[in-house]
Image 1 (cartoon, rainbow, N blue to C red):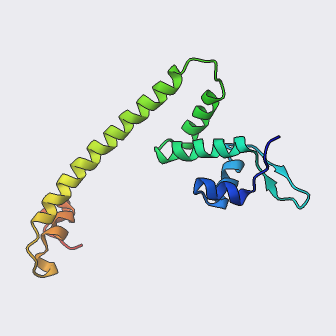
Image 2 (cartoon, rainbow, N blue to C red; image 1 turned 180 degrees about the vertical axis):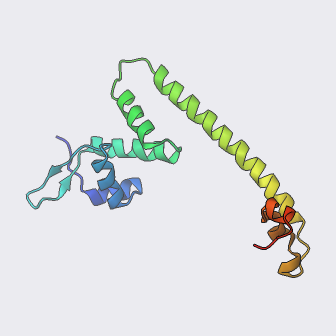
Image 3 (cartoon, helix red, strand yellow; image 1 turned 90 degrees about the horizontal axis):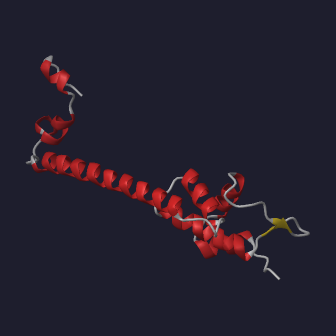
Length: 143
């Protein structure tokens, strides 16, 4: 016999808002649960496991479509896991690209911040660095 779990219990156990659980249902990541006589949603323990899977994949930055694909793969226990490996490897490469972009962005911003020596807004090197270059070339450095 499968235990029937409330939406509140699922939300609490997975640190998910109730609205998010409903939304996962709406977008098809969670199936439509049974209903009690009072029309409350009643979930099975498999739904709790599935929601934990969804939450973990989302926490790792996978998109909803990727999560859907991973869930489909997870349901095919006898198949080769190559597709899951490919998806995870591609996602890892995307994360590495984002880290590289953020590192470059951090370096650039740190360089701008290091030029600040206090003073007035009119002399602010940080604000000057954000001013469009075209405006400076045209003699109009107003923001």
